[in-house]
Length: 315
Length: 297
Image (cartoon, rainbow over all chains, first blue to last red; front, side, top):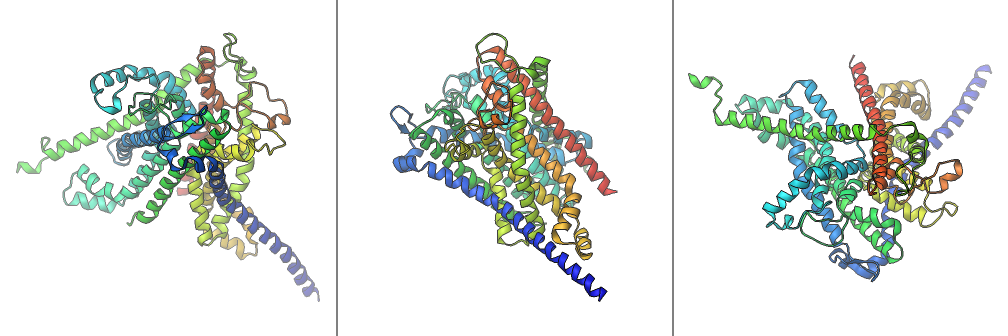
């Protein structure tokens, strides 16, 4: 009799606990699906807000560079061109720098503590807010490079990319500050991937008489290629969406120019500059530009994830 | 016989030397920006630090030579990041718990993990655009437009992926034996999670979240058209529904002013922002290294 009572009590408590358990599980389920809801929410909201502009200009928006709130004519070519050029060129500079640094950190040229210091310095660089880098770019980087840009224009002015008189704030400065911001991403992901390459491969290469750098170029880097590529793509996505530092230093001019020494525009800097004061169909056009930016960065990010999954280290 | 010795002039050895120096050179370039930026901020910003800075309101640019202080922006940054944390930590930790503890690697959890990565890659200004469309332009928050609350929400979108990821990864590191032991003595799933796995993973999750907060504190792009900026003291809860200043936006606005006094204020704000972010980062780095050491023993 007594035993049955205890059993009964146990069973009752168990029931409440079971309910709590189910509620808890479903709460976490809802919370985790919030991510998907937010993501779709962002895409839908930006798309619907840009609908007015989209239906009026269609794909012409992407190839014209008129941006005239008075005449109500909008085209984002300058900004899109600026976004692509600044991000791609900065990436081109960052890849050798970042991968080279990652090799320095993972090889044993230098004592361990030196490599650790280099590694943490590069990672701490990622922690500096972009607005602070923008401030630094305005007051330190710009005067520092001023004479160099004049020199560049004087001797290489025949190249279309350097064909205008250097402006105080220009696309090339934006590229330089982007390099500073991308460096930590490329370096840390490359370092992680290089660290994962099994020692066997290196030993085998050394064993058949390859020199250190022959080993790095023909064995280690190819083995780590997918990880490095993913890091590069993530950096590309970051570069395209980067706003503050670029806005502060790029000069914000919608006049199209091939030259990097003239002021430019990116989609994100256009948003940062105009969103607060825009009204009417300008808002819709800005949303359209935001939508383009979002699609660009989504494609790059998804491709990066796919790459990681597809080519993750096979060793 | 000679060929057995190391020959300096051999092309492979010259090439090796060259690339070694090249990578050393690249590494030097890579650490240069941090040193350069931090030194400048400490010299230029550190010189501006005085008690007025922390207590006064900033003066509107161009008024007079004295720029005032950054008190509203400092408090504003604390308030906005607090709001962002209040929203994103419960959601993120909850979502992370589901991914790590309940999901069995099915399509839903795969999709959510994918979504987390995609959301982490969404440009920060898009978060601002989204909140602008959803909250600022619709005046859904009791008729207020630009507000600290909207700014906090925009930041929470940026923090969310970080929090979920650190929770997910932190919980995955907890050995399964602990879970088996707890479930085996009759604890329910939620007791196991709340009393066993979450406390075990607490340190790594907390470190990740703190780093996420530090990162959010420096974000500017989502705030410039959600929280906007304010020159005035924050006096009470009602101010949440009005424009709110923040260190990051103050730096942005005042860096672009042509007046020296405002520029100096921007440097001072950068100093405070960078100093606190670096302290948080270095501290969590040391903590992580310490944890790793104790684990190895």
